[in-house]
Length: 96
Image (cartoon, rainbow, N blue to C red):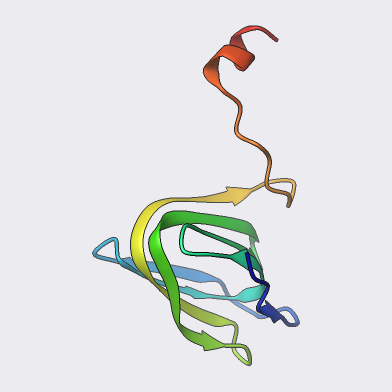
């Protein structure tokens, strides 16, 4: 995965998803890592993990903190502790 953007804090934060294939985000402070299946970004409101297929950046504005991504969106989540945790299997959760 590549690291592309590390800038200062921005004001507002907005996410717009069009037809599950175009994702526009504002208020992005840093893109920690990305590839064609996953983007890990820091926003004003927390760390965002975006998963999909064929994901690629089509617009990047580091001055305003705007990012536009195309590809098939599968999931998007805010990560509370700021670090991507390994997903646990159902069996490991049962045997805790």
